[in-house]
Length: 291
Ligand SMILES: [Fe+2]
Ligand SMILES: [Fe+2]
Image (cartoon, rainbow, N blue to C red):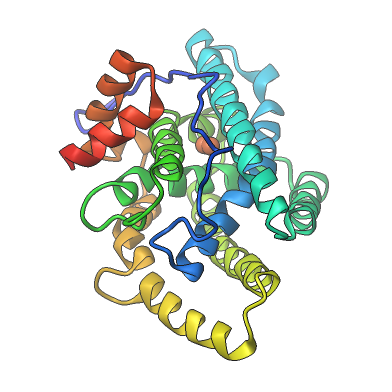
């Protein structure tokens, strides 16, 4: 391991209570339908997506002999399992609002099952490693002045803070199984990352369109929401995706390893606060104050 690498402990945290059954407003992100429903659309895909990540890594578990790596795989699965539980709780709230969660979940389920059943065995794992890179760099986007969660309800912010922290912790697990066990080379890795970046955006925006429709906005209202929302996502300076682009592109460097990802400034503050309070809401509040 070279001197640029950063090793992080994977700590599965269980039984977290974010108060998701509380009085969270429908448009909990800055009171903005597009921003809120964009994050909702993303969040909606997590439980099915995380089940797929677990399956694609689990297929290689029997071939792993290193006890350290096996422990990391186990903790990765436990963390992803917990993420699925919490995002499912949010999905229940979305269902109550009339959001077509079931149709979106069925679509994702078919897409992932198709990958597991029809593609070369390593490709779902390579896809997982790609998406794991996208989620590993999420922490920097959650906190700070440029956060895409500015104006968020604190309970939802806390969910994304905890999720981002744990994604940072297990960032290397799928990648290591892909390289050390499945022996996947550079071109497959970056080719599938390019496909993942495209499908991730296309599918999230497709689901977002369905959700905004289900909210009852007229065509004209939706057109205005899309115009301002796409600018928020893609404006060249300060857009949600534009800001993430340099960190995404890191993955395309030959010799890249997830331990090269810089530790987000919020990591230590969140961890310390969570260890002292055992409360993910408090940890998120402390991190926001320190940002
Ligand atoms: Fe996750
Ligand atoms: Fe993950």
